[in-house]
Length: 88
Image (cartoon, rainbow, N blue to C red):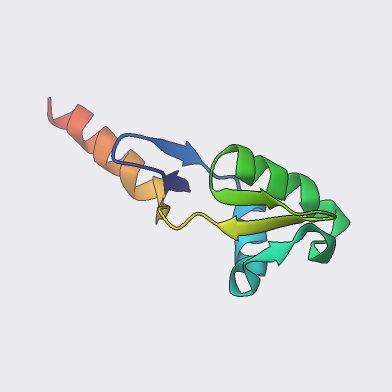
C-alpha cells in the first residue's frame, strides 16, 4: 500500500505498518506510553515516513495521523503500469 503525501510524493507502507494503523486508527492521537512495546518502532518508522506526526511532550511523545495523507492500493497502480507497457 502507498501513502500519498503530496501530488508527486508517496511512500510505501508495509503490512505490519498497515496493521498498526488499523489497530490504532480509532484511538488517534495516542501517547507513546499507550502504545504496545512492540509497536513503538513501527510508530517511529511511520513518523519518519511522515505518515504520523510526532509531538514531543514533557514526559511523553504524542503521535497523530497526518491530515494530508491519502492511502492508495498498490495493486491497482501496478496493474495500470503493466497494461500501459503491453499496449506499446
